[in-house]
Every structure is written in C-alpha cells, then in structure tokens.
Length: 630
Ligand SMILES: [Zn+2]
Image (spheres, helix red, strand yellow):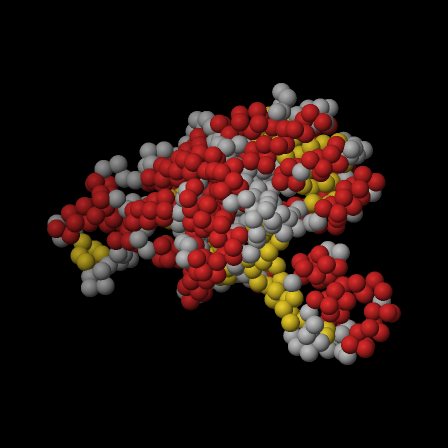
C-alpha cells in the first residue's frame, strides 16, 4: 500500500482515493507545479493535505474564503494535525507570534488570505518558513476572466521567486478555457501538470422548464421525487416565503440564508441533513462545505448570475452517483426582469466613490486612518441612511472586498451587553485571585464607568485592543464570568463585520481599483448572456452546453436532460400528438398545464392540437378547465 493511501486511511478513514486525487498527489510529491480542476465534491483538500503530511515542513495554503479556511483548520485540528489560519482582524503583533509559532511549533498548515501577502513584512517572515508546498485554492481568483477576480492574487507569483524549488498546486472547481490559461500564466506556474476531471456529471439530468406557475411546478417535482432537495432563491425573503408555502402544501421544508444567526443556521441545516426536512430553501450563502450525498433535486427558481455558480450549485445533487435532477424554472418575464435587475445593479466609478466615502463617514474613519480596523456593519441600515439601492450597494461592497480594500465577513459578530452583578469590592477580590483575568476586567471597568449599575453595550474590539488581548480571549472570559454569576451577559448575533485593509484615501483608494471595474462589468454581462443562452437554446443537449462553456468537447448527448427527453418523447407529427393527448385523457381529465407536463411539451403545437381536437369535437373542456374525452 502506498504511503499516501495509508495516510488517507489513517486520518480520513476513506478506503480509497477518488478519481485523480492520487495522480495529483504524486505529481506534487515529484515537485511538479500542478494545476487541478476538480468540480465541487471532488475532494480538493486531500490533494494538498496528504503530500504536505508526507514531507517535513509546512504547507502554505492561500484561500480567499475565511469561513472555509476556519472550517479546514478546525477539521485538521480535530485530526490532531497542527494548522493555523491568519485571517483578517488579527493584529500585527499577534501575527508575529503566530508566524513564530509556525516556524518553531511543528505546524503542518498555514492558511493565509491573499491580502496578507501584500504586506512585505509578512512575506519576509514567510520566506523564512520551511515551506514544502504552496497551494492556491480558488485559483480562478487570479484571473480577470475568472468569475471572482481578486487583484491580491496577482501577488502570489512573487512567491515563485522565493521558493523556486517548491511545488505550486493551483486548485479550482470551475474555470473556462480562457481563464485556465490565464491562471497558469498569472501564477507563473512552470510547465504544470494538468489534471481535469470532466465537467460532465452523467447522473445529473439538467432540466430547463418554462412555467408561469413555479410553485405548482415545484410541487409536482417534489411529489415525484420525495427525496432530499435544495431550492435556490435569490433573496432572503423568498427563502421564508417559499418555505412557508411548501409547508402549507404538506411538505417538510426549512430555509437557510446569510441573515440567520449561527444557531438558526445550524438548526435548519441539521433538520435537512438528518432528513427531518425534505427541502431546504436557500440563497447561495448555502453550500460551502456541504456534503450530503443523497440530494435528489436542486431547483433554481431564478436565473443564476453565471454558469460557474449554477454548475456548482446544481452539482450538489447526486453526489452518491444515483440519478439526480438539476432543474431551472423560468419564464419570459423572468428573463426581462433579471436582465433589468442585473444591469441596474452593476456599480460604476461614481457610485463606487460615493459608497466608499459614505462608508468612511458612517464608520467615522478619518482620512488616512482605518487600516486593520474591524467594525460591525449592517448593510440595510447603511443603505437606508444614505438612500442607496441595496443590491447595487451590496455589489459595490463585494467588489471592494475582492479588490482587497475591505474584508466583509458573512459570519455574524456578536452584539454584547454586560453588567457586573457583584459589588466592585467583590470584583477586585476576584481579580486578585485570578490575575490572568485582571487586565481585561480592569479595562472594561475603566472604559465603561456605569457598567456595575446598568446593562451596557460593549465594544469587544475596543476592549481587546486596549487590554492587549484577542477578541476571542475577551469573549471567552466574559462567558466564563457569566457562568460564575459575576456578570450578566447577553450576546446577540447582530451584523456582519467589516475590516478595512487600507487606510482611507478616498478617490486615490478607489482609482487604484477602478481599472478592473469595467472589465469585470463586461465579463459579468458576457457570463449572464451565457446563462440566457443556456436557458433559451432549444437546439442543444443541456449537459453538453455546460461542458462546452468550460471548453470541454462532448460528443454524445446525455439522453436525460430536458432537451434530450423532449427530443425523444416529442411526437414527430401533429397526428401523434393527437394520439398522445387522447391516450392521456382516456386515463383522467387534465388541464392544459397538466397535459404540458405529461407530454413534456409546452409549445404552441400543444395549444394548436387541443384547439383542433376541440373543434372536431373529439374532446370537450369542462367547467373546471379540464379537458376530457367526449
Ligand atoms: Zn442532454
């Protein structure tokens, strides 16, 4: 048995590798630059974690997704592997300690956001580390042709100079052919070995259905396949609405979006994971790190922004290789609406400048200040205050986030209020007995003089900074004091947090990144056109057109998508359509909508055939709008 396989079995308890994993590991172990395109669920992390464990030294992992980094670090720690993530919100002095730990503490994995590489002193320290592998996760972020370009990724190629003999492993789930080439050149990969898993998912039937009544269609689909399902919607409100409607129809549905507290998220997610709820209605915040093998159906009821996202979300169906369905429900008015909405929310330079300035005012950041400061932030109240449109503003913030100017966390920071419920004398007694807690407690008492008399809102960041501790240390202590009935403490999940990565320089800050804006906007328009093409093109196999989008040529039609099925079942002549209608009506009465579904034909031909049959008095229409044989 190979050593790699032994490690897989020991730490992951998997008996064998998934396709390509072993090849990628071997390539990396040979010191070869490697580029791997592994669709969602392909088991990317094993590809760098195993070779890193097999060699002395540590693996540097660059990733833009803070939640994902934390998740992976927690998973490694659970397996007793030492790993650490340097994300936003960590102060410089702490960072030095943590990097020293990496050097001397036998760490195996160091996770970094690309923005961290921008600081020279961090780069200097990294150069001294015994790095055995450099992994670039979400590598499409380095390309302007990728769907998530981040200029900070461009700095990664600098590492190549300092680590000329270390293998680079670039990983991504989705990249078009144009993006792939660009990734290799921007990262400076040297004759990389290429591994690409086909984009074709043979067990997924891609379905595009035109329908005016989406709820009815969802009901039909869920009844037909009463197994685990995800319904993707655009906004938080639709999550609750659709979920309520489905519950009213007798399904067991729950929902998930970024605005829920982590408690609610866990609760709803567990309901679905354990099959107590058949359906989870979610925004695209749902998905990261989810690995439920038996998802039968993924339904989108609004048009996705690009094929990359659609492919990833739809790909959560059928991980167990059983037949599964990826359904997109749409109608002509959808398309018009989506187009309008889509183009209206693209931010331009003026808008970006305005947003940035107002944001600084809102958070009271003075010119030349703000770097590395973390704030809790509520997008809605910001938009209400300055009368900004929410989606467009959200997009602008996303852009600033990708450009590395700010970091938005999707997680929720805690809104904390606190009161000491023992006398100040007793507090002093406690601190003398617990000298480790003294500094934080005294800082709180000094900062909030009234805190023994009434419940006071507490700024965790401020207390951490003043007392020279991390926010986590402060928060841990407060929880402990609460348990000991020394304080009365409430932590309410509140807003998302926002970190400034650069000092405020108004126009200068924005003009540095605005050159990417137009390009990004054009790319977004192109990508959206590809979505429209996917939806509207009735001449091509859906599975084939997705593969083609990613530059993969597929010869055979899949045989199970909405195009393939219609082609098979569509009567070749009007006569056979007549026969099909009559045969269905001989079983039971049906309305036109039900006939359209049964015949998989919602075209004008069906309407024409029904009219002809009515006129020739072969069928009748009843008062309940159902057709019946005469
Ligand atoms: Zn097909």
